[in-house]
Amino acid sequence: MKRIVVVGSLNMDLVMEVKRIPKIGETLKGERMNYLIGGKGSNQAVAARRLGNEVAMIGCVGKDTFGDKILKHLKEEGINVSSVKSDDATFTGIATILKTEVDNSIVVIPGANDFCSRELIDENIELIKSADILITQLEIPMETVEYALKVAKENGVKTILNPAPAREISDEVLENVDFITPNETEFEIICRKNIKDSETLEKEMVNWQNKYRSTRLIVTRGKEGSSYIEDNLVKTVKAMSVKVTDTTGAGDTFNGALAHGIINNYSMGNIVRFAGTAASLAVTKLGAQTGMPTLDEVNHVYTKSEME
Ligand code: RIB
Image (cartoon, rainbow, N blue to C red; front, side, top):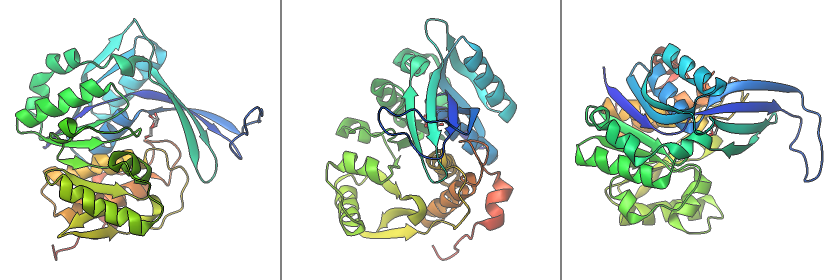
């Protein structure tokens, strides 16, 4: 079995279902409240695990009810959480998600995620060294992200950086990133350009990829699909058309599935196709993790191309 290590955040998602997002100063009566496990790191770990990989997680929760619930849930999913620290000096990360029928808006309070430190990486260095790939995101301190990527790269472990939530990424960090997976908004921040339409997006993608040749760029574009560059041309894999219930965690499913495709040596087109299919399936259910598909479920609908 292939080994994936995820260095990242763990949150309790407080999902409030509302008809619309309230205006500033307005109080709105919501429809329903759900306590669901989330955090980009934990979501990506579950996505990768459901596809049959051996997954270990490095991160931090508080020593509290939410932290205990998250650890219990991840263990039940079959994820190795022995490197997730429970810290009694803080509280478990929380995301308040306002979810309408078409979209969502999220406020994250990092809590324990801010305690995911370089020392924690040092304590778990053997776990990273023995992995086939490391995935990380930006809901933990940047210096930890940077260090984890460096340790992985120095030990010949492939790396994925999902630059979410959006932040600028330095060239030093990029040196240790094999795959970077921004959405369109995150890409605007990474390439420091104002992107007004798909033509500009594609032009900037080619420019960026020519500048950073050792980092493979994949831009996720919601219902448009995902794009990458091959031979100086932008290739877009269309998203599968599905009935959307909740888009939370779609990007995380994409990243977990991307890791699966990479370590199983799929062609670039098939990696993106496979990850896009998994993400499309994930949005059909409420909650970041509920709809994340198994390998059989993805393979059932995913059309692999033999031409690449
Ligand atoms: O990517 C979705 C995740 O972002 C949610 O689960 C929430 O916890 C926020 O971190």
